[in-house]
Image (cartoon, rainbow, N blue to C red; front, side, top):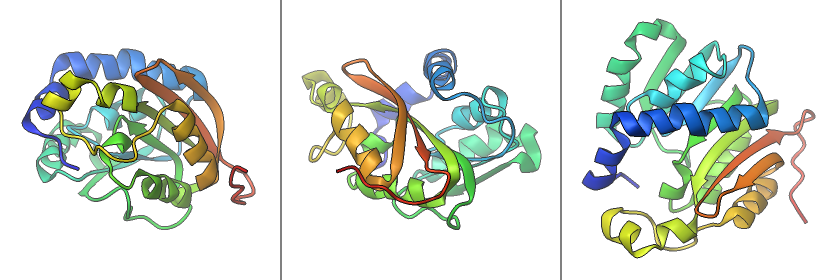
Length: 205
């Protein structure tokens, strides 16, 4: 689901970039460690701040990234031009990722999956494109935040089948990803999950 004008304004400002870099990314790095090289994917690249963080704070060699919004991809291309061929961008859908199976050492979600109506399909796609032993780093907004009257008035999100911390963690496990670490802030949450090194999918009971 595309961002409306209000949320697009909220996402494209220096304060949002600072929170993403100095709080969200650092918490995820503390929870799951750095990549120490490797090939990463970012779901929902926005204007390119996340890809920049993945290269600079997580130590990726290369980052692929996509967004549903062509305008955001254009903004990201301008921001990330200095990284040359270390970054590849496209317009795409998280429920049908344009990548071969077992392509990436890590996949990153900086608050994108709650925008997706069929978010469980997106998690299954994350599992598919991760290499065995690869990690999924995610920070997400929960139903408690999205159902607040102010959020409902200003922001455009799917209303059905939203998740809290427990539901998102279970969906990760059901997709085959083992949750290594998570943190619940009530309205928001952080997750690091691994595709098992043998690549065998083990759904939660």
